Image (cartoon, rainbow, N blue to C red):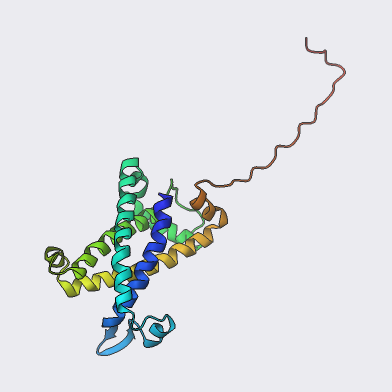
Length: 224
């Protein structure tokens, strides 16, 4: 599970980067209300700063190549989670949404006591399950806009080409927010937690037991 976790990070980073090179060719999305555009995805300065302009063919080549790595790595993770039984620790439970709110209050230092947890707390269960669903959604919508004729049934299920592209873009923005929150949580958890994700174990400091000083009593008889 650690291998698929770490392999997925550079793969998804390349997918987002190459996706930006593709999106540059038709950047039609914006936040508009009552005819006023508050923000366009993305300003020209953003493209210039990250050297994104005029790299459409390069972006498509990287995107469609690493799509296979993204799909196979995700499939390996899901299969292992099912076969090993790890899904029991991952899937949200009936009270997970209620406890996730308590986890949030604890992280914001509003609530002192954290709710009980096993391997993952309630918020982690929801977040990690959601990211799996998002990955599946990215794969389906990506195929729908990559081959809308060959995979016309997928395009139809996604609500058509244009809506599939909106969903694909929205999922990408969701990954970015997930990354930011996830990395922040890792930093707050401390170095020992980060090390355990790499090595598989935590280092726990145990105090040395106090030495026992022998006592001598001359009145006691020696033990035979």
